[in-house]
Image (cartoon, rainbow, N blue to C red; front, top):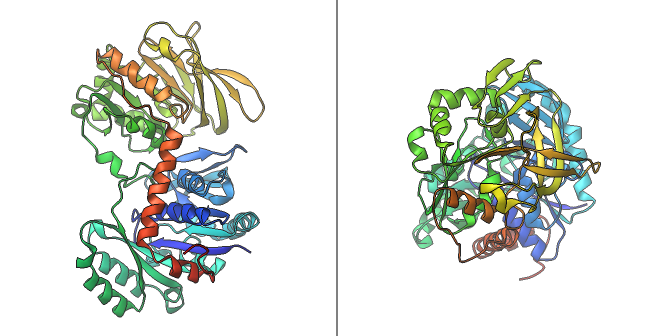
Length: 503
C-alpha cells in the first residue's frame, strides 16, 4: 500500500495546489514513485487525458511535477459551475449531468466507491500519494457526508497538514479558528501547520509561531516564502486577473464571468516584452496588439455579457487593424450565430460578433479528444504559421460549420481513432480554433506574438527563445527548492511512518 499525506487549507487559494505539486517533486527527487490525488475539484480549467477523459488541470500540473502522465483517477470528480447555484458533474472523466448545489449535496455520498476505486488504482503505481483538500475543513455546514476534506482523510487514514495564507492577513486566526471548529477526532489528524506566502524577516514571525503552537498543541511545520512562480493555478481568485502592466507587445484576454481554460495563454506571458492582461471593460483594451476571446462554460451567457459590457462594439471596431483570436467558446462567439435548439444552455439563438463566416449549433454530447496536426498555409498576415505543428485537446459542446469557401485554420488528427479533419476558421486578421493548448508546442507562441506585433507595426525580436517545457520544469525545481528550505521534511516523512531517504 502507498503511504499517504494530505494538504488541507484554512480557505480557498491558500496555495494547496502548489504545496502538493512541490511535495510531489520533492518525493520524486528523493527516489519515490509519487502521485497527486484530489477527490473532488471545482474548476472551469479542465484537461483531456490520453483516454479522452476530462479532469481538473491542477492535478495535471501536479502530475507533471511528479514526473508522470496525468490520469483521471487523480481527480475522479470534477464540478464545472454553470451558474451561481449549479454545476456540470463529471465522474471518472464522463459527464453524468447538471445538478443544483442541493441536488449534488444529496447525491455525492453515492460517489464514495468511485473515489476509493480511483485512489486504490493509484496505490498500485505509487509509493506515496499526496492528497489535496478543497476549500476549508471548517465549513461545518458541509461536514455531513464530506468527501474532500476531513471525511476523505478518515476514509484514507491520512495525516493532515493545514496550510494558511499569511499574505491575506489573519493567519493565526485562520489556523486557530479552523482547528476549533473541527471535532476532536478531526483535530487529532492534524500533524502540523504550514504558514504560506510569507514576506519579510521570518524571525519577526517566531513569537506568533510559538504562541499558536502552544495554544493549539500543533507544531508549525514550515513557513513558506511568497513565491513568484509561473505555474497553473486554480480559477476564481487567481492573481493573474489583476495584472495590468503593459509591455511592448500587449495581449488582452477577455475575462468572461464564466471563463474556462485560461491556462491556454500562460506560455505567452513567458516571453520578454510581452504583457498578458485580462480585461472586463472597453477602456482596459487600451492599444492591445492582440485580443483573445477564451473558452467559456456558458457561451451564450458570456456572449450576452460581452454585449452588455461594451466590449462587443470595441472588438468589432478593433478587428479592422488588430489581431483577434477565439478559442473554443470564444471561437463560437466570433461567428455569425449560435443556436441552442436542445437547450444545452439557455435555448434559443443569438447573433455572434460576425467576424468569422461560421455558425454554431450547441449539442448535448461533449467532444473530448486529444489532437495533433499542423496549421494550414495562409496568405498575408498568418503566413508565418503555415505548416507549423500543433497539439492539444478539444472540450466543447457544439458543432461549428464554416461557410462555403471559408478558410480553415488547421488540419488535425484525432489521437483516439486517427481520423483527420480541418478545424477553425480564418478571415483576415481574425481567426479561431477549438484546440486548447494551441500555443504550447514549439515556437507557435513566438510566431503568434510576432504576427500580432507586425499587424500593429511593432518590431519584436525576443533575444531569448522560450522552451515552455523547460520553463515549467525550472519552475517545479524552484518550488521544490523553496519547500525543501522551509519545511520540516523529517516531520512530513515521519507523519507517514517513513524516514527521510536523503537527509
